[in-house]
Image 1 (spheres, rainbow, N blue to C red):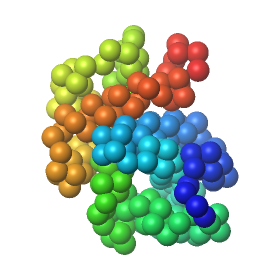
Image 2 (cartoon, rainbow, N blue to C red; image 1 turned 120 degrees about the vertical axis):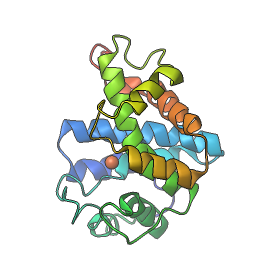
Image 3 (tube, rainbow, N blue to C red; image 1 turned 90 degrees about the horizontal axis):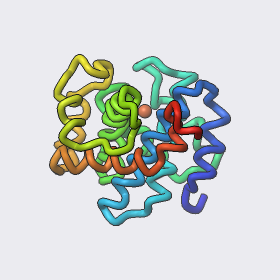
Image 4 (tube, rainbow, N blue to C red; image 1 turned 90 degrees about the vertical axis):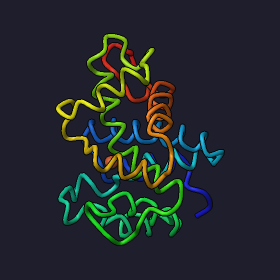
Length: 193
Ligand SMILES: [Fe+2]
């Protein structure tokens, strides 16, 4: 295929996913990936598409033994490029698979924002303003409080930030900015999305 578009990513994910929270997660990761692409001066829509599609095998194969192991069988028949398939598989590196190590900035970003957006989302849900006006400083407090959104793995996030070689604040701000830009699509209560 030529470049994976966001529309195509959405079409493919919808074939394998029905649960609303998984689409919410897809929208969060996609939004954050778009902001990371902007940071690196890369192709925003392509990164958003990868973000949208990254958990394509999760609903059918949620276990740590299987998640990411079925990406290829789902995406090859769709004509998705090998590079994109590897990028998606790499987000489970050291967690569900050792097949592909995150090497590119896209892969490292995906690995990091997959978990990090979960904390941003949880924080937004408890704020009356949702994403609006979320400061990096207040978010960092939530990040440090490991009891908050406890299932979002801080070790994985820190490992990802280290791989990226960026200041944690840069990555956190990108998640906040991207998710604020896409708040209607992510769909917070009261947003009327
Ligand atoms: Fe994910």
